[in-house]
Length: 439
Image (tube, rainbow, N blue to C red; front, side, top):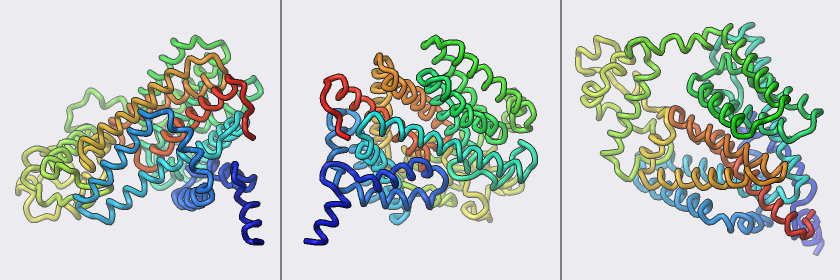
């Protein structure tokens, strides 16, 4: 009886206790700071949320297109494990998927009121601000400049291409937030936006910066914002351009666009990676299995690579190796160039086949339709979440053409965007019906 009484105090039947919310907010502010911290807090949150997880399923139940796409995607991924080149790695990939989508359920479990939604949003954005300042200070203390350097980036900003995409999504979300908050909150937004903008110099990506510019301009044209927002955007663009002009990897990246393909290795290498992966899939139609790119035996495709990806082969293995037909070298150990697919859609297609890719695209489309629909709702915070989710999903989905974003942090960012959107819609519906809100 004593134990039962203690458990009932720790886990009340209606909603999580205060100490559980403390862990939840700690997760939101710190998940992007590092893989170890993410896994520890994710497992802990999932365990203590089990008594309340049915509440999350009830909230997502009305959005049939969304949850059926997720379910079909997970089933297709699980099926591909049976045909995986390396079963152990494939199961690790499934754990990644489960972790990403279970975080969405945790958001639906813990965010039940308007106040909790606002606190969760502020906490998440503050976490990105802390990460940005940390990465920027660490970078500057190491290089004393904004030039690129190896192993300086941190947490979710640890990869140049991923960092550019993630920060672009956050910057766009801050632009949206600036239209829906009071003037005193603009200082807090600036404290997050400034380091993110400055980091675009050493972490900048041509594709991502272009997509961000197009998305922001489209948003400005559609929403016709006031002078404060226009000034914020203009100052941010000037800041980014000023920083990029001082960086060798900034505007200088655009200088080589008109050069012959042999002088643009990052472009033709990616194309050859995609061609090679599609060829690998043709020999493994069910898919090679999640996380199995390293398990591909490139030596089996030696002749195909020599004939169909000559520029990439010469770039990685040298002219002498090409002249010798790539014979006598171990392609796996010398340079396993398909380890990173540099394209989420091609990567997913190769891992789990066309069914998984269709299910994933269906999920993205369902989330995007939902976000656009509720971006027009005449309610400050509901429309704000709709706008942020719509722009963020467009940026994430578009950038995935060039980067394998949805593994790890990219998937979590997408789920958080959709999770915040769903909770805002649900809370807005409760307020509109004038029913008492559970607190």
